[in-house]
Image (tube, rainbow, N blue to C red; front, side, top):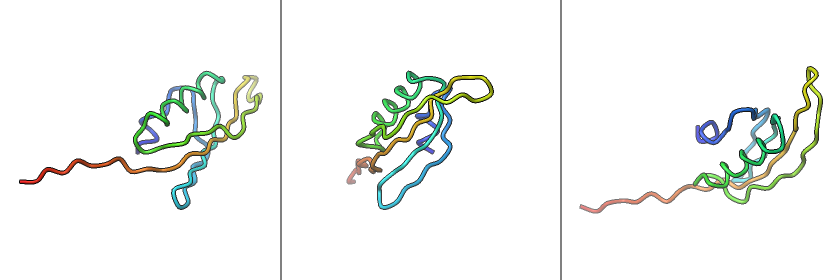
Length: 85
């Protein structure tokens, strides 16, 4: 659910894998700037840490130049504040 909240327009996730807290995300962005914004949004989220770009390459799809990317990150759980009555 959090992934959809941080996903900017013009970025599409094609795969998401999580294993023991290690996350791998593959996708396509309209341009490098859109991919960078996605990475910044992930890093600002309390659920993702250590976001790193693994691969980026320009592709042409239906006559449009796009950026294919692969990211890695670590899943984290935000601390919950508990009140004591």
